[in-house]
Image (cartoon, rainbow, N blue to C red; front, top):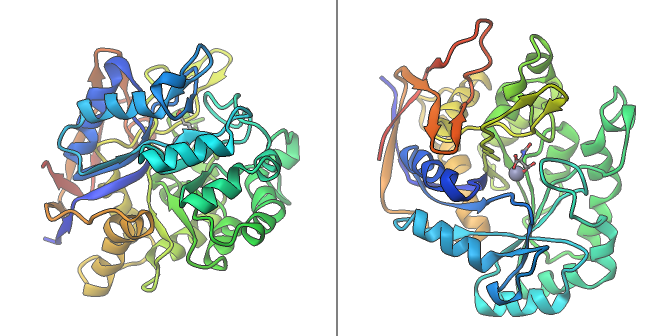
Length: 372
Ligand code: NCD
Ligand code: ZN
């Protein structure tokens, strides 16, 4: 049986929510070998202040969520909570946040682009108001949800282009040129265009890739309307999946790393639409290993295991300057039964449950994690 002993890893983009969801979501991450995370609640109101003393009715703070997060995950080696960039973000907030040590990353969402993202301002605003320059000067990482905002119809998702390709073709090159020392994580990239942009942008630009974008294409979503796979950015075409697989499995990969964008929704589909977000707590290393195999990587070879370790455990900490944990966990090529995750706030459905042809509340993964 193939078995990998790996350092515990960091999920460098995940939503843990708050209140009654936070502790059970942390527990699912812990059980899959996570030592820490870049985590967000995705609240209304947004986490748009650094310090608790600056909170008001329109904004929660990084300080408040970090405190809740640490209490829910006392054994975590490191936790990063990004500040949500809004029209109210100022260079002075960035500077004070950086000096306090509370602020290590900021999050850009296209306004209205996904669940609870209506507070963001247009991207060029942060270029003009000095916020990005302050981040560059103080070593704060910019985490980008890279989709053009306000685009409709074929410009949003068409044969010639889509909102993500538009963003990486038309907005990112100027940004990287203007702020060459700004560390940027292109989060949950879904297209060949975005993956190529990252590979050609040098060591200050990196990307997270989710399990769902490595395993599924739009066909999997459309056939049967598999709404548990509905997340933003939406899964793309087979050539995009192939490009992402090449990027994450390359022997010399230093820029692509694990960030699941795991986003628990206790109510996913409603009569008028669907909440965006796939839940992969508890199952992510197993799904990533499956994706590496689908990419043609021999997971019993030293090269294959080395590439997997870089993607899951090493590249992310190197980019963010985190300590690679001494503690390990074990990932084995042995079936693992999974079920729904019950929480006091409701039930959460991890992928690939919800992807089967017949309704069921179980699934069998081809890889298993020995719980930590
Ligand atoms: C996320 C969520 O539900 O919080 N949804 C998603 O589609 N990934 C928000 C996000 O990061 O886009
Ligand atoms: Zn996200």
